[in-house]
Image (cartoon, rainbow, N blue to C red; front, side, top):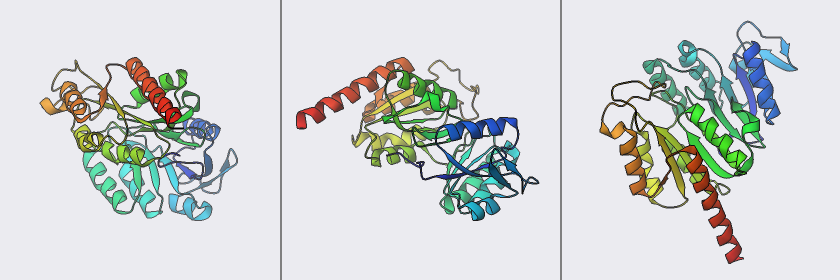
Length: 298
C-alpha cells in the first residue's frame, strides 16, 4: 500500500506552464502519475504536452475530476493557492515554495485543514509512492517499491536518504518531504500515524533537524512500539540563534537542538542514527529481522 498518494490519483498542476514546470510534469508522468490538467491564469483553452490547460483550479477540477494538485506559485501567492485548492474540493496538495509569510501560512493552512485538504509543505520536494505516482520533485529513479516509509523535513536530506535506500535495494511504500518552513501543512506525528496504519510499511524512517518542537509530538506513538522507527536528526553542531538553510531550522532553546531531540526520541524507543549511511544499515537489519520472523512463523 502507500499513504496519501496512489495510482488512483488524478493530478492537476498549478503554475507549471513554463519550461521548469513542464519538465516537472514529464518527470511525474514518468513515475506513473496521471496528470489530467494544468491550471494557469490566462492560459485557459491551451493544450501542453497533450494536457488541457484551465484558468483556475476550480475549472480544472470540475472538468477532469482531479483530486490532487502540485502548485508552483511563488511564496506570496501560496495563501490564495491554498484557498483555491480547498474551495475546489481537492484532497491533497503539494506546496513547493519556501519562506511563505508566516501569517499567510497560518491562515491558509488552517483554511485547508478545515476543508479536509492535506497539504504537504510549504518548502518541500513533495511525495512519491514508488511504482504508483509522484507529486512534486522527487526523481522517480531515486526510488523503488518496498516496505520503508520515509518522512523528512529537509527536501535535500530526504532525497539523499531515499537514494541511498534504493541503492541498497531497500524499497519504499511512500516517501514524503514534509516541508522545512516554520509552519507546515501537517505535523510529523500525522505522517507517522499514517505509516503506522499502513499494512505494507514495515519500518518508518523519520528525518529531522534543528528548530521547533514537532518531533516531540511523535514520542507517544513511537513508545507504543507498533513498528520500528529509525530517526536521523541533523544539525548537531549548528550554532544557536543562527538560521541554517531552512526557514524553520533555527535553534531558539535547548529543546530545539539536535542533541535534545535525539535524546528524547531514543528514550521513547526510536533507533537514532548518526548519518544517512548508518541509517541505511539499521533499516537493512530491521527488514532482515522482520523477514526472518515471518519465515519462522510460516
